[in-house]
Image 1 (tube, each protein chain N blue to C red):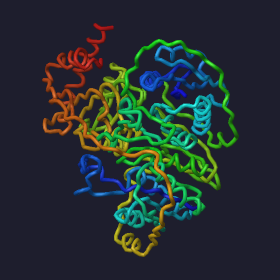
Image 2 (cartoon, each protein chain N blue to C red; image 1 turned 30 degrees about the vertical axis):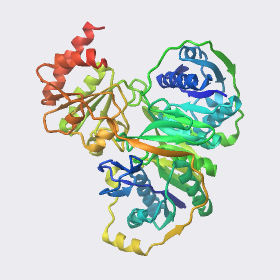
Image 3 (cartoon, one colour; image 1 turned 60 degrees about the vertical axis):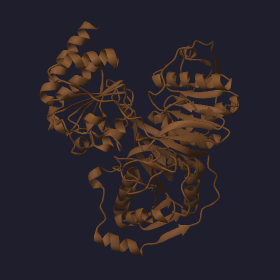
Image 4 (cartoon, rainbow over the protein chains, first blue to last red; image 1 turned 90 degrees about the vertical axis):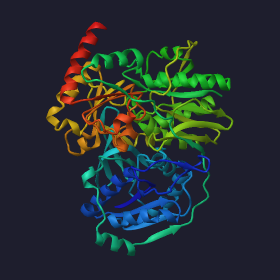
Length: 248
Length: 322
């Protein structure tokens, strides 16, 4: 079984979000970049398939050389080879096009990308990749088993879960639940040493148009002051929720 | 040309999300001097859409589409959009809509903007405002393709009555076996409980509650308010509550009208996930808890004293306002 994990290089979840160049660019100053958490759950699930079912696991990212440390981390966690498509990620469609180009030559049985990146939250790359490759697709996946050429997939729906069956090749949008938080792996020294010798294949991009373009960013308006309520005067809280906020 | 909306329904009735996007699309239609067409799946009475400005419904009645199927639905919506010559397609952002959106975008060669929170800033260029960085910022994005696909965030645009004469016509999309290659085997959904996604009110508990045995009062408070229950990340990581209740950056987003956080300190990742809630109440015994800075109303006090009292007071309130 050949697995491809699509990795997005994103600011750490604790990062302060600021913008530069008249609010048109994300300010990377002092920001630590990590594997997108939704992708990392998929990568960790892939390690299970590697260890239990002999899968080989490639990781891919669309981005400049500055994203290589993130790919190296994926190699240190246990992926076999990395592919970097050497172009800036501009929008979801352009990224999906580049990934589709990598995937079509790779004969992958399973491709996992996070349900969304935690920076742009587009939520479109895995689905568009499936659409472009005409492969089966399941989104917001919280459980995945593979037997022969068939996958059993558990998907989170609003208010519950559903179980689906699909033939490989399959593309999934992954998230927490694919593995648990405690199953995530921190690279050890041996992994880090080995990662240095693993292939980092840089491929040049194909021509791909963008469909959307970011114009500018804006930070939410500062909040008003918090109204503090005495715990012995909860009637006031109920009154405010009813008459001012009008939510009860 | 018209604006097409995909209206979600459950048990033959339109979801609130469907009426919100109908209201939203009607506003865009006025600006662009066109009309709103809806596609609906297996809904017998579609007249409700007329109340919110829809003038035409393509009504799909097909046993094979009784249950949601992302590819088959995306294919059907794409065919409807092409038939109508729709230049703008609007969907909501339920789990199902987010699932089919990128497939639909590929079918239509449409640029897709998800998590949109307002009417377009302009229609030429077509610029929309959406959330990014998990609600920590807004991003203005142009959609540069001929057909535009907009995903309107939950609970961001109010339902607005604008009674319109509505025509319904049967629509039969042409579907192939390929549309049904991913099949649902079973669904596990609590029918008696309101989901976090659909809830008007969410009551959420954190580590301050000390253990899973103390969740009785959270559930009771939720019951009194008709709310969904949720929890912080550490609580789900420790297995006190199921993962499906975890709200925050890597969990579920909350966009309810009211969010009540009990014993949650308010880590940045948690706040990101619940930022879209309209009104936030925080109950915590630590006055320094960062969550107080992000709240509309704060109560500094012991949850084990405050919550039972609040339940009693709310029961009284409900009895007097029934």
